[in-house]
Amino acid sequence: MREVYRILDANFNRAREALRVAEDCGRFALNDPAITAMAKNLRSDLAEIFQIMPVEEFLVSRDTPGDIGTEISSPTETRRADLGDVVTAACKRLTEALRTIEEYGKFIAPGKVVNIERMRYNGYTLEKRILERLKVHRRLVGAKLYVLLSSRLCTGSLRETARATIAGGADVLQLRDKNIPDDQLLALAAELRGLADETNRIFIVNDRPDIAAIVGADGVHLGQHDLPIAETRRLLRPGAIVGRSTHSLAQAKAAVNEGADYISVGPIFETDTKDAGPVVGVEMLREISQAVPLPIVAIGGIQADTAEGVMAAGASLVAVCSAICGSEQPRAATEAIRKQLG
Image 1 (spheres, one colour):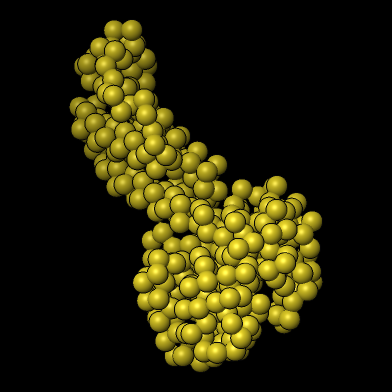
Image 2: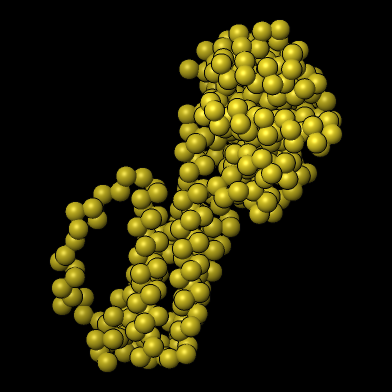
C-alpha cells in the first residue's frame, strides 16, 4: 500500500496548494468575498476528508528526494501570461488531484470519499467564476468616459443622444431613467443593448438588475440602498459587472468587501441631480483612490474644464450626464470631455 499512500499524499498536497492559489486571486486580486469563501470552504472540506486518512502512513511513505517527477517539467510550467493563466493552471491541478484522490482513496476509505466528486464539480465552478470576474476587470481597463443617459435631461431623444455619445468617444453607457414606465424602460434598455453590441461599448443599467437581466446588459449600477451585490449577481448573466455608488471612504471600503467590480464616488462638484447628496470634493476622491483597489468612477458636475483634474486625483473613469445629455450638440460635448481624459 506504500505506493498508494505516496500517491494520495502528493495529491492532497497538490489540491491544498491549488486552492490557496485560487483563494488568493479571489481575495487579493478580485476582492470577491463569494469566491474567497468558496475556496476556503473547499479547503475545509478537503481537510475533513484528509482527517479520515492514515496521515501517519502518508508521512512515512513520503519520499521527495526519490520522486522522479521533481526532475520533470514542461516548457510552459515556468511561464504565465496573466492572472487567468495562473488561475486556470491552479484549478486544473485541483480537479486532477481530486480525481486521483477519489480513485485511489477507494483502496483505503471506500464509501468515505464520495464527497470528493462533489468537490471536483465545485472546483470546475470555482474556475469558471474566477475567470468570469477576471474578464470583467479586463473590460473595464482602458475605459475612461462613462455617460449616464436620461430621457428627462436629453435635449433630443435618448436614442439619438446615445448614438452621438458613442460617436464622440463614450466607453460606457448607463441607462438611468427612473421615472418612466417599466415597459418603456425595457424597450430603451433593449435598444441600447443592441447599440452597445454594434459599437463594442459597455452597457450598464442603473438600479434595475431585473431589466439588466432581461436584455443581457453588461451589468448594473446600484445605489447605497439597493440590493446586496451577492443577491444581484444571482439575477444577472455570468460575468456581469456590478458597480456601487459611494459617498465616503467607509462606503467605498464596504463596497470592496461586498464584491463590487467598481465604485462611483461623488458628487465631486455641485450638480442639479436631485438625489446626488452633498458634494464630497476632489480631496475625498483622492483619499478613496489611494485606499481602494477597484476602478473608481468620479461623478457629479464634471465638465470638460474639470475632467482632467478629476482624473489626476485618482479617478479611473469620469461619469457625465447633464453636460452631455443637456447639450444641443451631445457629440461635440462628448468629444470635448473625452479629449481631456487622454
